Image (cartoon, rainbow, N blue to C red):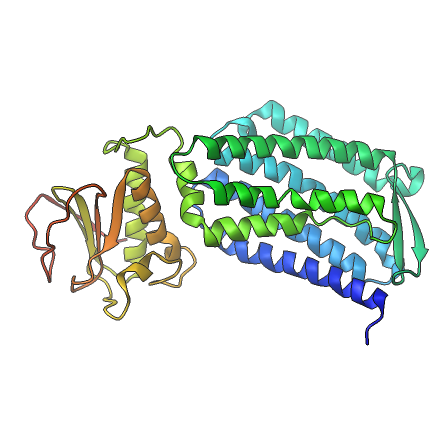
Amino acid sequence: MLGTGTTELLAYVLVYAVAIVGCSAALRRAVVIDDDETRRGLVGLLVSSGGWAAAQLAYLLAPPAYQYALYLAGLIVGLTTVGAWLYFASAYTGRAFHRTPAYRRAAVGTYLAIVAVKLTNPVHELYFTAERVATPFVHLAIQQGMAHWVVTGLSYALVTVGFFMLFEQFLEADFDTRPLAALVGVTALPVAFDVVEIASASLLDLSLEPVGVAAFAVGTLYAFDDRFLSVQLSDGVDDGLVYLDEDDRLRSLLLSAFRFAVHNEATRVTVRLTDDGLTVADDGREHSALDPESFFEYGGAVPDAEAGIALPNVRTLARVHGWSATVDGDYEGGVKLVIEDACAEPDPAPKGGDSAPGGAAASRAR
């Protein structure tokens, strides 16, 4: 039977291992987000959070002689999550804070100043003091100092700004964003653990913020990815309007369809206008054994990391405009996407090749 100390150690190890795995899994989806700045911010947040969790896991498992350095490394890496969170929130909500040179210089300067205080802690011990203890297991116990609480207060204040930006965006969306709001709220739950940790002498002075970030990222990128991408894409779109002349978004929709076609081994893609929208047909591999809906699942028809999210992106972009995106299950000779007004009455689709009348624009897949 395991002792109390061993049980607590295993619990901490499991929590941080889950955080590392969660950040790694979410990173696989984050790297193929179309918007460059949102992708950059979210990838940075996941890398820094995963690194923070890894440093704290190493602190728990290392001999006491190495724990001081590993704890310090965790503090330095963990601080980068604040900047990554603000960058992501600003980019995702369409703000320009992350691009403003003055803010960027202030952020870098503040980070370097705080890192300098942390690195010189062995001299002044204003940030924390450390003492080797044997309960609940042998480890280097940390007692936080005044500098820690000042930095923690500043960090929480800045993180709250990111929460405000995200919640405001969710409130302005024209569809149900409560699951996304709940996932953002999950990232704040570790703060409650911090409060309990302060009041309890039996808990280790460790941060669980990476766990909250992992839960948020996995939830938004796997369970509610359509809503997560749609909130950003629908920013500024008035309720009830269908924008047929939104060049950038229509171009993004078509590029996602072409990206899928390339990985579907197509040599030709044909775009045809219809009474209610358009069709995009390729001459690549047939997937007759697949349910048409499975094409819109991540990696449903193409396992490649980039192409696997192409058709889910097509559906997300279509929904922003009030359109529907489906795959014609009767089409032979490749894959045919049907994009049309979701409120229109569907006409019976012709079976076989793409022989419907209408202007055709053929694009070579490359």
